[in-house]
Image 1 (tube, one colour):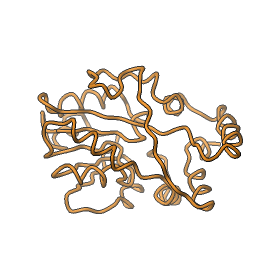
Image 2 (tube, rainbow, N blue to C red; image 1 turned 30 degrees about the vertical axis):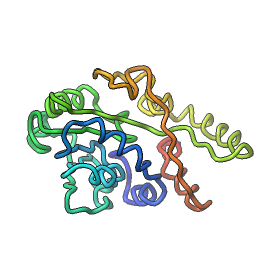
Image 3 (cartoon, rainbow, N blue to C red; image 1 turned 90 degrees about the vertical axis):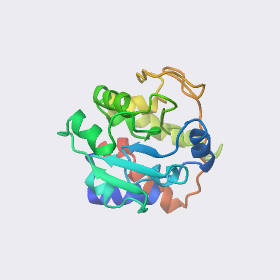
Image 4 (cartoon, rainbow, N blue to C red; image 1 turned 60 degrees about the vertical axis):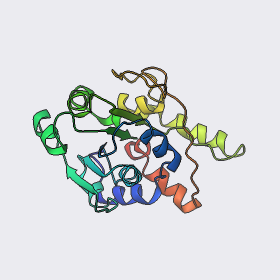
Length: 218
């Protein structure tokens, strides 16, 4: 997401769906503590603003400054720019230290990460007793039986413009390495399906497509 321009970041903010409230409740019910959560690749804070209803404080990080400028403000969310040059030790110190996180989430983001670095940091900061890491992505857009075939054709047409990173998302993370123990809500190679209902006007839907990574690359 570091490549987003100011204009693209604005379109992303306007068009992207919020995640279901029940999803945050379900995740929060699985963590032993509720003091600190880390939203990695927060973008404009769509996940952070949901997490803060269940955790005392949320640390939200991103390498994209244009996105962070547009992030949802909240007194218990701290946003931090984390450039690629930041070391693992610097990241650990910035977000809270070893064994500090009750929850780590990466919403629509982990496929952009250097997974080795992310997983190394995650294993250091996640609480060893009752901590949880959750990642998710949305890729299938279902509108109506009349429109869905056209949407599928559009999605298929992006294939020549997709990078291996994008294909991780289009494959619903089925091929994403995930070296963590399952708690029954998905595991490496076996993600669970999550429905994200979202209402958009035609203008809003066009904005969604304009902020879509394959479309921007094309």
